[in-house]
Image (cartoon, rainbow, N blue to C red; front, top):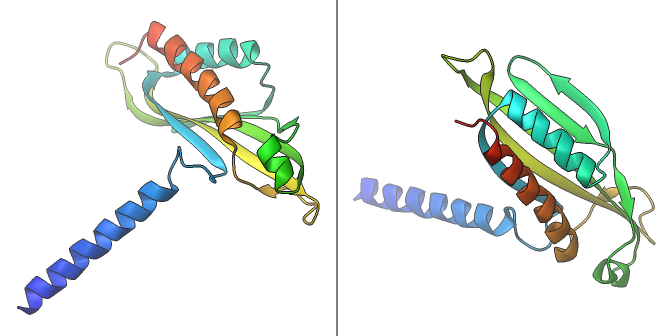
Length: 164
């Protein structure tokens, strides 16, 4: 009986934790992050796609770091005008940063480059009338949609390259 109650409580706890994660995950309004998975990619085609698509969308690179286990490219913070919904909440300035993060998975047997699991992430920060310092703020749907187009361009470009 005790085992059944403990098992039920544990299952319920895990279920509630999972539901909470879904409610706060990507795609929900009010979140300051937009994140998408680019999947398994080779380093060369990933960098070629990043250069082409970030150039097309005028996303300036701030920093690029590479190690045997990780490739990370961060854009500069790009200041933009607040969306109407943000302005109504007292936002006086807004900005976004794009991050491409790729974690090493394995080395291709017939190729010298590695296979990575890549993610595309956009961060949103705002300054308000009451909080003048930059801080995370909810990402409006229009901004999320703008960066979803960048992600879709990246995904298409990566898919046309060599991929595993």
